[in-house]
Length: 121
Image (cartoon, rainbow, N blue to C red; front, top):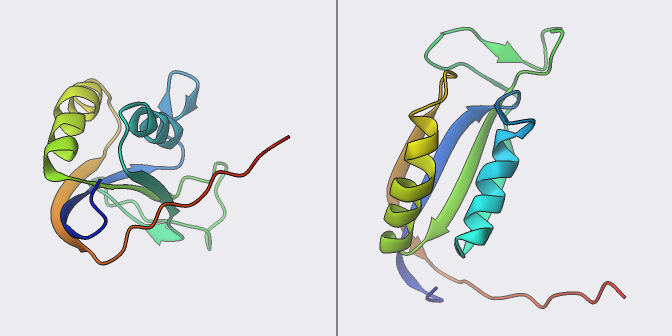
């Protein structure tokens, strides 16, 4: 990925309780982005929100499960975002029953500096 310039940001709005097989859905998205060699992915936890059901979920209210909004953001070049969306995300999300929303928008990269991997040994 380029270090400066035009790019796309893909946002996937889901719930913290959404699953892919037996794992959290947000993990599936991040690991799929990594396998697809996307520039980066970040999972953001929401403290309050609602979706198409219009049921408000919040840390403030006691619930049996911690069903809270989450956003997975992936940034990369337009072509890679489009390919990832068409080949990985949309086929899966067409099959699930839970509510979600996927958006794409233009963004400008001011700085993309690669970090060094730490030795774990």
